[in-house]
Amino acid sequence: MAQLNTPALQFKNSAVFGIHPYSFICLQMQSRSLTKKPLVIEARANARKESAKIRNRRMQKKYNGTATHPRLSVFCSDKQLYAMLVDDKKKKCLFYGSTLQKSFRENPPCNTVEAAQRVGEALVMACADLNINEISSYDRNGHGRGERLKAFEIAISSYGFLPR
Image (cartoon, rainbow, N blue to C red; front, side):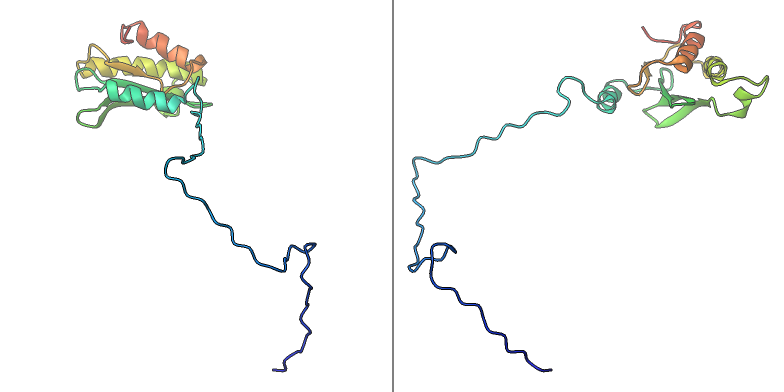
């Protein structure tokens, strides 16, 4: 390989370029009595309104379901409703019902609000089969009540399964 001889740029010592004819040493004074620390203030995110998931996890720690008093967990997506009876001690699902299941949707055909009501009625029948008279907690997963959830709640509250 051939080496290219390029002339190096040379600048005179000038204050314009930030080069001084004499070098200076910056000594840092250390004082043991006066130490300055930067003041850092951290704000909590969502201080007034915390996340629904955080609230729900805190509630699940308090209310654990058992075989005789299970936790009713309901999730309502944009289009469907899912309900579960959960025994937290044995980590078992005692009942699962969804508006997607054909048994709730087909005989006769219905929309999701009517299917949510049928899921609630099936939940009441499953509670009767499992000898469950009371539900320990009603877990909506931090979500608000919509049409499907209201239809589901009406179906189970008429039998007295919603805790007060």
